Length: 168
Image: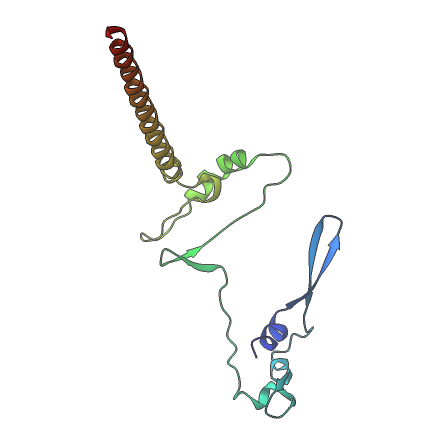
């Protein structure tokens, strides 16, 4: 059933086509807009040792529409809006020209607008880069101090050994 339902409702990958350097997936789907086609799909039954319609294995399905634009992010319902920038203007230029109009959209009190992608909260990005940088800097300083101490010990031991040999 897990393979037949996606075949009847959407599509399933059935192969790969190589086009130069690219690999293109080939999808197989049933071409029908009628939802009752789902119950007519054949499924192999091990007990009957033959293909039987899905209607024999199920009492039916309830079809309902879902809003696929609303997702959850941090346990909050989120609508993600995205776009492609046309050839010519940069993403920063488009962001500057549209930001005022987007932020002027009236929203209820509990609904915020957050920018994602390359315009996401820069402090979050900076903290993610600064912590490993500081850690590596501390390790480098620690290694440098250790090497300096090692060289100082070697130098002082060398001096004491020379002084002793001169006295003898």
